Image 1 (cartoon, rainbow, N blue to C red):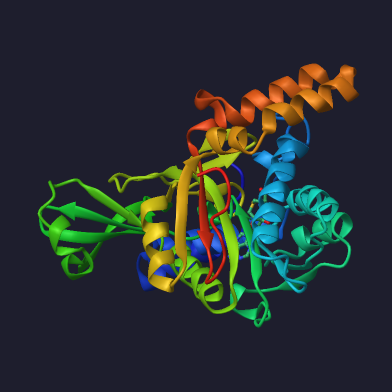
Image 2: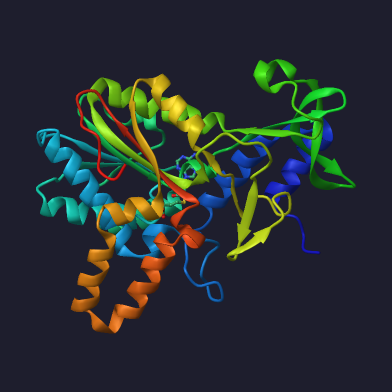
Length: 354
Ligand code: SAH
């Protein structure tokens, strides 16, 4: 076996001296290192193709549909002169480039504000979106103007918390050491009070997963929408109804990886609980417009006509375009698992496709 990385060595030492750490702390530290040290996005599983890919990297059509949606809602809101395009976790900047390219054709040319913690990703974004302004957190984005916010595959990377029903009651799922290796363990402290009363009686072995950081981000976005107006699109893989069970997974080189092996060297994600996200948004004061499957939403926005037009203009790319369309929209590919949640701010209309 290869030598443990400096991060793994530090986590093992920390746990050996202080005891198990929360899964949220583990995931936060692993992902901070992961995103700071590489550009993980790539299409090619065989070459230097990264660990996973995302809808905007699959096809320009994805960002274009987002741009159409933003321009439409902005026009129906009366085309306010000053508006901020806000994108947390913009990856390579591809989505912003494609969406803003379309938006400008409709007269929408917003200030661009990125929320990004990774210096590596920031430099990639600067290449594709000149003129963008960066912030470390959503709270730092200037206030006083409506926002058009887009987040794609941002929430799934945020640290989750898991609670398990044991014979002794509810316990937090922590990361400890088993025979010297990082592994999930049940915490000692009774956590029954952290479980909503209606769920406390669930069967032994039941696991509840929450993402406090994602809920907090939704509340923050919703508050902005309530105060300054605007609209938001939150897109990710996840489920629309509350459910139980662990959805923690690690991806490395486009394949599943043990989430507790090589922390910081694989992408750690969890499915997004869209029911919880919608609740948090309502709580923060935004109007929930709807939560739609990605495939249906893209079709409602006209992605099929766009694919045909592109194929006519570039017959050599027709096959690739067809494959990309299928990948984004087919239920057995990204079409059903990925959801689009739309929010509206005070005085703003409902966006299209819900
Ligand atoms: N939205 C992009 C990239 C998704 S990958 C796309 O669709 O292609 C996740 C992105 O979120 C990366 O840019 C990563 O650096 C960033 N990120 C991860 N955790 C973050 C955090 N806590 N705060 C801000 N950005 C974060």
